[in-house]
Image (cartoon, rainbow, N blue to C red):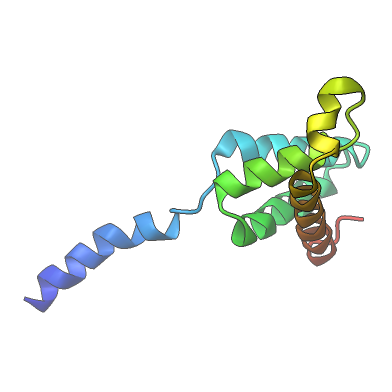
Length: 111
């Protein structure tokens, strides 16, 4: 009986571990953009990968999409940008992401 329970646990455990995982394409996009912001230096491949991993530990993927989008478009000009600049809730989301990102960058030595 214990063997069956252990076998079932082993089948379910990997799903639980990766339940908050981000799609590979989103992780790659984050790392590439981060590297681009640091002159494409190869050492930032590891540092930026560490940063997105640290962010993923703090935000579920759906929340990451929401808050990172809010942060990305804070400086968008014109009428369309108002949807990202004006509402306080969006500004708070952007601030949350920036705070988490700064912490992740510090943890992973992304300067």
